[in-house]
Length: 312
Length: 277
Image 1 (cartoon, each protein chain N blue to C red):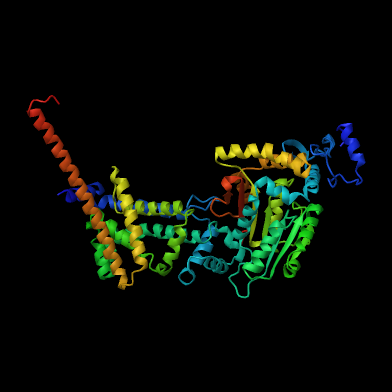
Image 2 (image 1 turned 90 degrees about the horizontal axis):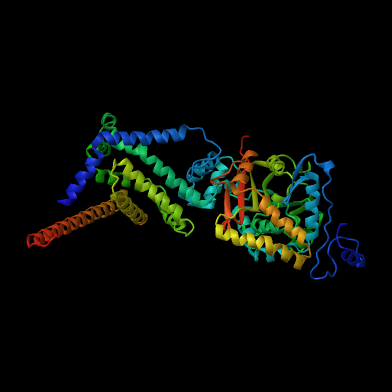
């Protein structure tokens, strides 16, 4: 925060709000100052990485990821459209329809409890509610949207007000850390655990997978939609070019926040390959079918699914 | 002349009962090994994980009533003690159910072939129904006859789901499913030729498998509309197609022989006229 030019500091003093978020007119070419000091050597007890930056403590990563999403919450959906050319809607639609929540062989249909982790703005949750309530005519499907970040949750809350009343009553919001879910979510109580474009931001992915395993019923499904590795070298070259030059630039122009979007693309780069992440899911005790993952758009994103076995 | 030659050649390559016994025994051994090996976390490609297999085998029982659909999968998951959502562990949904049918019926062909071709004593002891009597003569069959018999056995394995098979074929013909479906078809025709004791490794390896794949696929399509008793029309159809292939291969062989003979004779005529060739 400190080490930026005096000009920028003086611009900031002109702003009425004391918030660091961009709610005001911003000079076209400037970005927000970095909000975080260099990591202090004292709290390096258990380290992870933040983008390409190594040796960041887990606590600090949690805070810094929170900062990123606080700052991008309001422009999040617009930015998703710009960054993926609207294609993220196709991925999310496919993710939800392949999971087919609410489908039941019984009559009346059996209730289902769904936990949507890192689901802040409700993109996945609203689609699942639509799929369950409207397409599968199963009103007994309840979705809990959980996010560590209250800014994202509040965006989701305000967006949920546009939903039909029956779907609003089937929604609840829970601010929680996915690596240590609160006791209000009991062991073996969830049918479906979803996390879309969130798991790479977790400070401790194996711990989050263990938590998922804990809260899922035997037979329950863990499903993850996440950016992944592109197999085709030509597509990969174009994709890397776009993600490392295009996305931070759009982030600066549209959201006024280059650093946050630089972090996003770096975190995508640091995320394990499809096979490695599949093995992490298996290591947490889940069983996977077939390859255990499905590539979308040549591997730009991938869906991983795992099921908690009946007898562990 | 040529067709008989090729038949004899193939029979020679198969070298009669002894090698067929070995081939069938090794195939059976492979199946036994596959079944007894402890399931690791990662199944070999094309096979199914144990949880997947539980759901699929339970769902398969619902296929005659509900078809190769998500409904059947969901009922299967319930029967196997899983949740409705657990069908997600089956990676390709209804297509996995179709693949389960294809793989399990292909794998069942090896024991069935051993039963038909290599158990004359047991069959005779069981009493001579016409079918087992035909089986007891199995060792005398030529390779093309064995191919016909095994293809027929595989077609018969479809009879419980044949009224649902057109739906399955439609799913298999979807562009994203075509490669996997063709791969399974290739594996089937290879399995049939292997079990029939066809050990030839000349270029006809490819043409034989390609023609059998075509014949099998068309017979299967014919069978979906066959209402005759015991699918007799399908078997006649299958025999006609196989005979056509045999006579076509024979005709091509004869043409090749004629072209070769005429060319060398012409060459010799030219040489006799003093041409320096």
